[in-house]
Length: 200
Figure 1 (cartoon, rainbow, N blue to C red):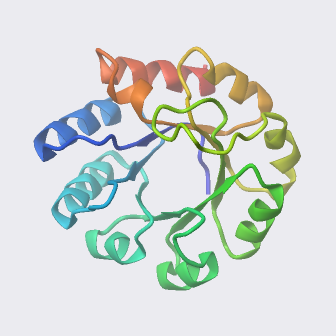
Figure 2: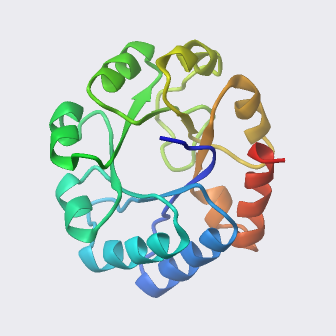
């Protein structure tokens, strides 16, 4: 698959209407992919709404951790973390859908994920993250080492518009962002600014 630019991850916003409005602005700004993530509760109605919005814009949409929800809501695929099940089993369930896998700071984990059918891999936390302050840190050199895997490489964790150029220079194809995107005064403008880093 091709993945280059801003990978938006939904924030923890209680009101569905507010969440959808923020995502609409991010889509207007030209994000490359959207991931739906809810801690403890992922909702079919929200996921279906987001899937429709992304489909209308031609933007790939994946669900975090939950293959069944991804299939039920019409998502393009799923993103799995360390404790979210076997990537090979998810690959079989998704058939031709997108499979992304979090690999933290491990190139070996990334190799295994690609062998199991992952379409992209994510490394991080690359910087200190307000979302996951205790997360393991991944060195920027990992992106250069992982180029041989032949799949898009996503950086996640503590990313801002200020430090994102370091990741592009290190070899990341995409940056996954929550806070610095959805807490921006103008979400669409912030998304466009990220896009320009990868598509000058």
